[in-house]
Image (cartoon, rainbow, N blue to C red; front, side, top):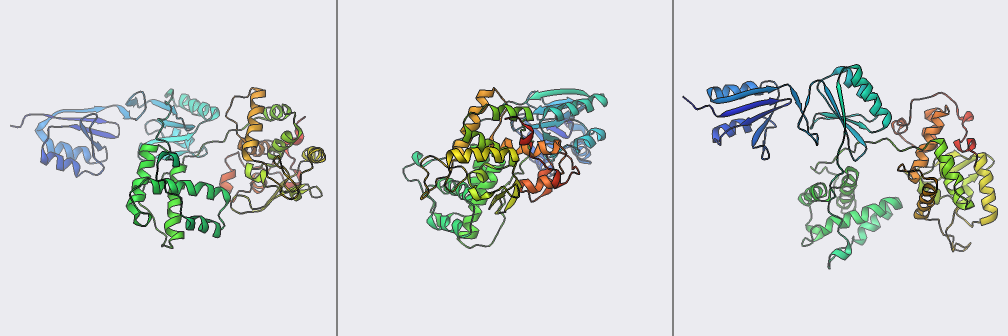
Length: 455
């Protein structure tokens, strides 16, 4: 008779099998789809799918020493391995998401699906939603209504990865080939895309210092992608953009056919934008005494501009007759019109009389009529940073936050989401829907939120 020496524990969605090393047993377990060896726990992990437990018990028979079923749900929470069936665990992650771990509770799932950018993680078997105090309280209230024990935890900060290789780190740093740069220009890629692609491609080719550029192929792309995730610990958007920069070389520069690389291209989980209240915007703008600086931030907020759109505004973009601002060749190479606030127009006229710009609406120091110099993005960011220090606002506010605040305040004042989509230059209405529900006011009723402020 066989000696009982097999331990099987059913823990939520996993079957944990501890057994002596035996080639026949290992082959049986390995044959079960998605099974894997866990070296930390020294057990085999088998998915608790229908039929898997029966297959294991039938195979091991009398050799089973322990068969235990836990009334818990498996989780990868930082503080513990399992949660009870009547519990909801919410983990606030460093990337501003809420990780929601619980059993199969249809009413709770139904509520989660109403949250913008809710996502089901099929690998880890949990839900994630964007973090906000409002969503956290809604989830907590739903848990209490369903008589679930609610626990809120904060995940530790993500471990820092390796820094990007720079020219100073190696004596034989390989520069991006000129034909790569020329092709980007030839295909009219935006300046921002060019600035992003070139260093990303250089990082790729310098990751293989002993390889000639002509010898790099699919295997190198996959190896580099894994390096970005495992060693550099970059974000999903960084990894995706790096792969696109590499694909550009093989497909556009070399003229190869378009192809898919079998690497894990992550889906970026969306977060809710940070938004300032109207009172906070008032404090920021009122704290600025420099006329030009106030005009810069007021223009961004009152018209919902990106920072690149602001510094690319020529004087002729201001149409005071139609009370509009024309944005040319914005993101996606699109032109659009947005609002010209009457209060902003007054401020711009005052600024214009004092500064007398030559071509660009906002110009840097040393600008002349023969050689007008654009204002820099960094200078705009510094204006906002000083204003935030002056006002004592501690939330994470960037220049782009002013654009988000513009859209949110319009919606709060009753503006139809479809018009806001047009003002922001969004191609997909889903991009705009993050701000709030659709409303019904028409274009003629739109007023810039700046007009409500006393600045």
